[in-house]
Image (cartoon, rainbow, N blue to C red):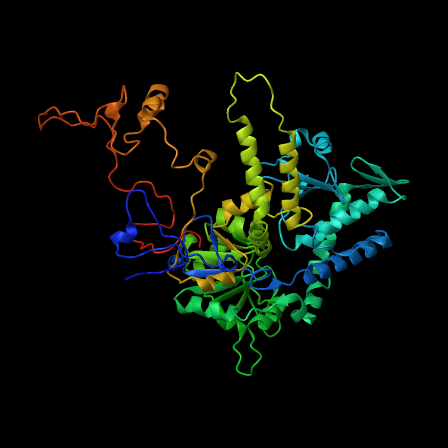
Length: 570
């Protein structure tokens, strides 16, 4: 029997598993747009509950139409608050904002930072600050994440807000009616700090979403603002058909949820199913992330009026009914779910993913719509990445034959300039503020959050259609620099190592796998003849025995009972 797949054969250094099984195995890679990527291994058949957020998950909003709608409504609210009429002239530019930025309300800057708070990009209004200026404001070009000072613009709903912050600050700084200061602007007796500007914009965003016309205008033209994917009902039915249960857990109220979900799942025929029939449980007004801690009162929704029934609903939860509020503890108890039984799918790195993972131990799937563009640039701009690798190699070769005895300093200025130019061109391929996940060779704060809290991620959860429900998502190896930059083909003289590094004693087998600690001076012998002892005497372990069975479980979803027949994050 020959199994023919898409790419190269799997090869191992010690065992050819394709020969062992009589199979010609090859790594099967789905196309990038169909892929689900893996941070932590997950066996899909172990998932008993598939949970979904609605906004930007089940309901993917069209870009830039939806962001433009939100941007225009927030502008109107600001002008009504007393901001200059000129604010209305700004038009939303989707090439500027990117998720994951920090807004520093002390200096009014949008910051793109890495996982540790090191500043990668700093924009003040529409001005991009140079390294020297950044260092003046932020010692060592570093800022500690402090919620009283920094606001993390993590969600897709934050994109219009991000651009409007830049617009308003740039306008105030350059308007002849205002005088710029370090922490804001002045106009006569009026002082506007960057913190107050941020608070006004943040309040306007909340007002537009909660009390304003954003949801009303969205419902009035769902076709314009919401993506309708015909594959959605197919996937939901397949999930339930394989024995799993599905639920919606959304912060949106019932009226809006009902309108959007009916649009997404109604096929327009007289025999069309009610949208709730695709889910076992529906919870609205969840108030995440509060839902994952103390939560609120769980009530049942009257679907005819949208009003909440008095009293606390104590169960059971029934299909076709809609519930409001509650907490993760109550909800899990009522549906009989344990932490790792649930795969929760959402777009909000904090409200959906971080809290459900960190507090409740749910398995997590992050939907990242921007991943489509990220993959496009990653593949289409391969020449730029190759240029950067070549420049790194050139830099390495310049220093290759130099050591601590070298007196003359090599000139690497041209190479450094070339690296900066290529890196800039790479960044601009993604947008004005660069990639969501990186800046040059540095990963962003957002990327670190994805790696830490999202077990799986993809441009859309609909990509699960391309995987069987018995699939084992296996995470690729995360290599440290000493592993990523040293090839296996490179050899190290074991005798030199023995002479120079006493830590080799920790290894009982090294090199070709045949050496033992007998070759290492000072190491206890494992092959010495055992001295006979009286059976009546208590026998003590003089040294630990090398384990003969698996003791280190690298994949939290892996076990000896599992049959693993899948590839790594394909």
